[in-house]
Length: 275
Image (tube, rainbow, N blue to C red; front, side, top):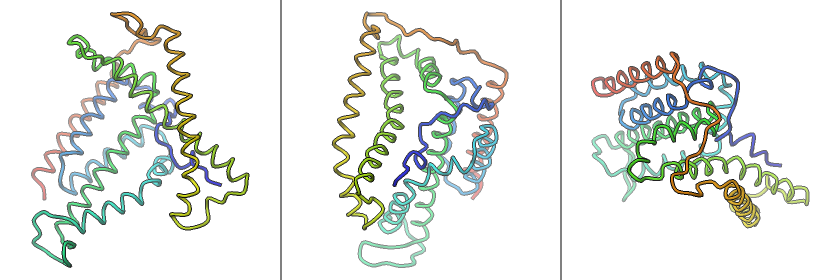
């Protein structure tokens, strides 16, 4: 029997009253933007080592089990390994140190270096975004994104609608996870063994579950839209969603943002100056 909810932890909020959980969502979003920019720009292993130290600090402040966080990486490690192999074999950049070559396929030091950096960048980005969802409720995340994007509302961009669509999409991740787990358990109770056979045989057993999964998703989306319309969500021009809690900047939020900005600047300088 497959326990998907124990493996896929993406999108689950953990309210453990940690300093990161109590932090203003606007500050967390700004720090995340800075870290994403730095992670996308750095190109040296020393800079990634500095980023790793900063992530360890985030892990300590979050008070979340490291094993629980790393569990979320398990579902797509095989896919990343497959991408890494393709990246190495079909690398088309400058290749000075060649280890193996056959037709279009080759293995070089430059290809290995570039592929490892790409995989590290993906892992760090996934970790940072996961930590945001672990330490921020969807309500706070919605309020923070709307507050940061409010200037765009004045020039006619429907930021409230875009943010709500994005938040609903995130909310459907754990819902779909629980739904597919329920369907798998129901089929397993009828004698279907999902833990036997090769990859194609297992995929053939899971494929029939996609139809009821999407039908359930459509029913939930229809019920959600009906509930929002019944509450007159966005019904008239100039409508604005009210908030249960007003966002306020604290000293810890400002200090954390400054430390993040300084750390990102140091990591970027290390990437530009150190080999």
